[in-house]
Amino acid sequence: MARLVVVSNRLADPRKTAAGGLAVALADVLNSTGGLWFGWSGKVIEAEQGGAPGEGQVHVHQAGSVKLVTVDLSREDHDAYYVGYSNGVLWPVFHYRLDLADFDAGYIDGYRRVNQLFARKLLPLLQPDDIIWVHDYHLIPFAAELRALGCANRIGFFLHIPLPPPLILAAIPGHDWLIRALFSYDLLGFQSKADLAHFTAYAQTEAHAQHVGDGRWRAFNRTVQASAFPIGIDVEEFEALTQAPEAREMYERMKNEYSRRKLLVGVDRLDYSKGLPQRMRAFRELLNSYPDTRKSATLIQIASPSREDVSAYNDILHELESLCGSINGNFGELDWMPVRYMHRTVARARLPGLYRASRVALVTPLRDGMNLVAKEFITAQDPADPGVLVLSRFAGAAEQLREALLVNPYDTAGTAAAIHLALQMPLEERRVRHQALMQNIRRYDVHWWCDSFLDSLAEARSEESGTAWLRL
Ligand code: ADQ
Image (tube, rainbow, N blue to C red; front, side):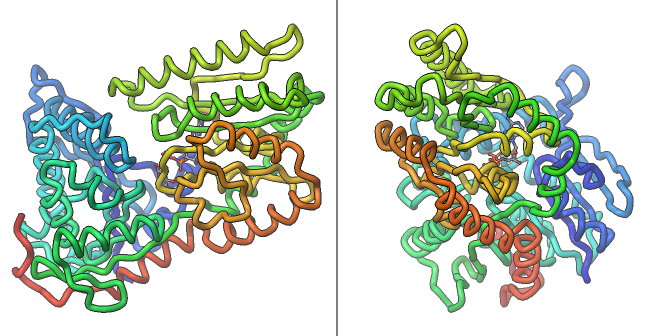
């Protein structure tokens, strides 16, 4: 098999299981092909220390048979490419939040400059039959930049976040440049059929692409294959983690501590796409409208810090803290606090214990590419007495996990009613739903995702070759 080259904004050491499902899945293929993983080192070099736009030192580490190659970024590049364009424009717009996007014209230049820098640094390390797999919104123009340097390798792209409909995409100044850049890939992978449909709608209406059969689209003198590959988790790894001592100990502790309560759990990165304030309002509505839940329902909400350099994150942090405070102030008793909110990350080894001790999981994003917490929660359950998943219809996972209780997170009363139903659900119904959900999660696990993407990439190939690549 050809060598796999993975390109993503950040890397994880594939030998460390704490890195999580994606690193574990990629590690298999990277290890077996003696692969290379390329991306940003995480280091920012200030101008006074010599950090210059479009420049960056390269570091090479050998992790077993896998080569990890990283590049430093200058302060100016980091602020424009990462904070400005990736997280200040693409993240909000792709999550349908035009109101939060900061279309500062300078960002796009930095975004392109870093993609060019990465392409320049990777090119000399490539072998002619390497297969290149690029990940996520930070790197949309990466293949186009590689092609401009003469790279003729097979290149695939997977978008981990949603792709919005054409009219939302069209709000981005330079959207035509971005989508045109996608046509430099041989294969485009999306999380859901809905995202794929948005791509094809854009391709037809804005790029005037022609469908040439089997999900292949032709425009700009290039043909690209576009498909949905819903990402999964490493089920076996997560099951083993659930049975390991740290998770068991966490489970026992939670069961003892909350023996008289029914636990609800939320585990998210603190991000406005995750619908945390809406979730709190639904929980408050539950306590208001269903008095039987008072003194019994306890919501543990873990929100791990993320991207605190973007101002919208501070707003969500304060809103969430204030909602939790008011719910506890209004409903709390001396021996019962309805919400336990923690702004931190839970160690991965303990997460399954927390999930298993919970009767209900609240996974209610306003928009989410997939949401792996939903799949982890189901996997960690005891099949004989499983908990219930309350899942937003706007998470990519909702396309697959039809036996969850699907909710509209904007509908406070409707979500509260679904949470109440989940808390009351009889054992037999919980078992039937859990079994069906588990079947799907097991079948479409992260290895299926990885294998099916790479199999499709091996088959997808534009008719063009040599130097006929699209120039941006
Ligand atoms: P994320 O937005 O980061 O990822 P998600 O898929 O929900 O979202 O979570 C990724 C991982 O982070 C999960 O393994 C989860 O356990 C862990 N995690 C989240 N919050 C945590 C916390 N507070 N403490 C400990 N661990 C926590 C992006 C897209 C998603 C898509 C993934 C994968 O936004 O839609 O599912 O990529 O493609």
